[in-house]
Image (cartoon, rainbow, N blue to C red; front, side):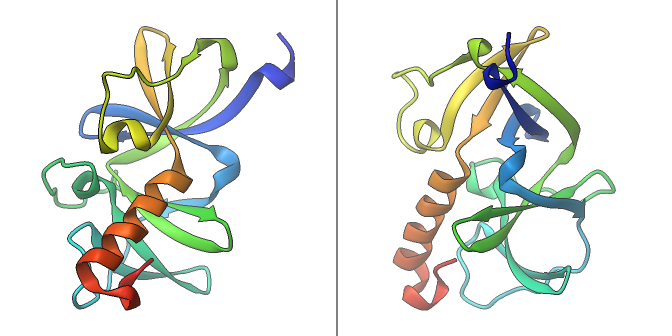
Length: 158
């Protein structure tokens, strides 16, 4: 196996499920601090935070993926990702694992996964007797932008 066959991921938990996002898409990870709500935002946009000199919109992935809203804990993390020229924070239940995942353990999402579920996944990795859903950050944020524009008007697009 060569290094070309490996991709590094930040693993996080959400609703009892393991997810992974390519580490090259993550600018940084931090504890969740003060969230400033934004009026008329879609339900899955908790507001904005000030992080490392920037005001960043934050998306609650629990709400976005249809899980019940939960109070933030000491384990809650903010993953700040970069897509194109913008930074967006993703609130997750916990994140503390960095993992190299070989390409041969990743399978494409099954055609039976329809709707949003199939659109935000790049694949599913099977490692150490667990499944890791690999998140397509670009597609997730594109879908969020589309829904935000539909629900709150063009000014609310992330």
